Amino acid sequence: MPALGLPRAKRMRWVAMTDAAIDLPAFNDEQRRHIGDITASYRRLTGRALVAGVEGDAVAALWHAPFAIVAHGTEADPVFFFGNRVALELFEMDFATFTRLPSRFSAEPLLREERARLLERVTRYRIIDDYAGVRISASGRRFRITDASVWNLTDTNGAPSGQAAAFARWEHVAS
Image 1 (cartoon, rainbow, N blue to C red):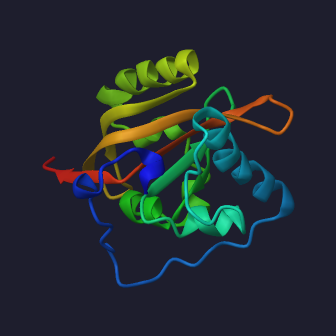
Image 2 (image 1 turned 120 degrees about the horizontal axis):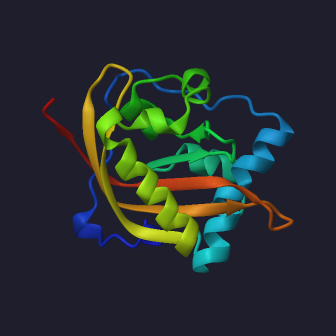
């Protein structure tokens, strides 16, 4: 996972939170194009691949990555359009539920102002790789992410198409 810039010794291993496997959803062509913006934008901004194996099926590579990847669109109140299996387990949601969630609800109400400052910073710099913050799952479980990369997404024409985040380090925190 060197694309996230984490030294191997500092990376947290992904540990399944449930015994059930989360299957890759059946995506239509438009969804695949939008999800493809995640890897293409990361490569344009950094010159590196986000996930090894993206040259093949980018969607499958993102889905099976051993770290969390999430992305939201450009709506006035942005809604997640992608969360990989690691992210879905952390947020304790299935794909259909997660992709109806406005991304602001991934943070607790008191931390949403912090999240807004993060998104403004990413808009200004296009990519950051030092984000840390607390997120909340569907059951109310809180977890702190650290060393997250967050970047702007653009489509093949260069038009803004959202923002994405990837993180390999998290820890559950007391409520």
